[in-house]
Image (cartoon, rainbow over all chains, first blue to last red; front, side, top):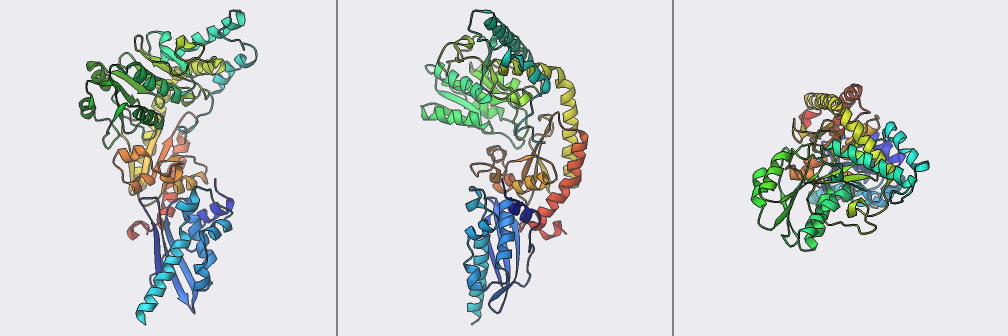
Length: 125
Length: 386
């Protein structure tokens, strides 16, 4: 059902964990639906210096979370905001159609974390 | 450990079927000797299936294309035939999807259907079932055992209630036949659905037991085979295979049932002992011999399946992520689980391929798979995964 790349990220996900003093945190999904993910980001010089995630969900949910962190680390916030669900799926060698919407939420979680960071920054001004 | 999803054909069944593809390819409706041979083969199989469920007469068994068709013939057949008597059907909230969809179809045609709830262990509430009966009730349809949570229903008592109220009693025994002893007479059953491929027989064949005198309207019209109840040229190799599978199942049932019950209980106890925040779904003792349905807090079933699959263990889940509809199992919701609990359920269905070594292996690897996924999950309380 899943590509080798998806299985590889599922079995060995990158950047798992939490960042206690994160600059931004984003959560999307809902355990009722079967997928919940939280992204933590550290920002330095307008770039994503570190990202960590925690995900409850199926294989696709875990693999897309992992892939999203890989795609985004080192990118500027502006570049990271342009990462789409389709980019994540493409880099994983595709996802089963039924998983494209329900489990491919990691890019959204990342965007939420960046928005959270920007909001906090605004508030400090 | 996913026998519920598909069982391999028994090689003895295949050997019994083989001649009916090449040598004895006659049509049972023909008058010549080829036709005779086919007819005899069907009747011998009918006898074996009748014996499996302790039917009084072989003629009470009608061959169909499988469990789904048997359920269709039983439920629609009774509904259409008894329409002048009433339009009310009673079933349960945990039936197989085929029964549920047949009932929904009949609801669109003006039938009324009551879905009786079950308790936390998946047992039908007898009082509520009896209370649901009214003077328009023509059929009660309850599964013998649930293939997902394993719970076996008090069939004899339900049948008694049905008959006290002059209501026909249908039992979907697809998940149970060949695994636990069934006695249609003693258990007050009027109609009983069986499938061949759930007892190591070929796919594409099943049977419906119809007690003599039970009025059923055929749902497939044609040349009048199977005493007019199921038209269409008989699937001879399939029927022969089902007969052989029924014969083997009956012979092995007691020993195999004991063996699988022991494996099941070892698996359940081992998991509950070794893994914190794990729970058994379904009834602890009134359950199918090879069935263990276990639930793990904070994680999701599909990722559990994948993690186990990578280690060579194949299982199923009640999670939405493994279903085509993206809805969690209706059975798990009916026993009162929250959606997120249903997502974390895993179904082990053991069969003749499984040994004690398999159980030991699962008990060895499963704790780490669960632990890894809990480490990944934002729902896991910190003190649990330290």
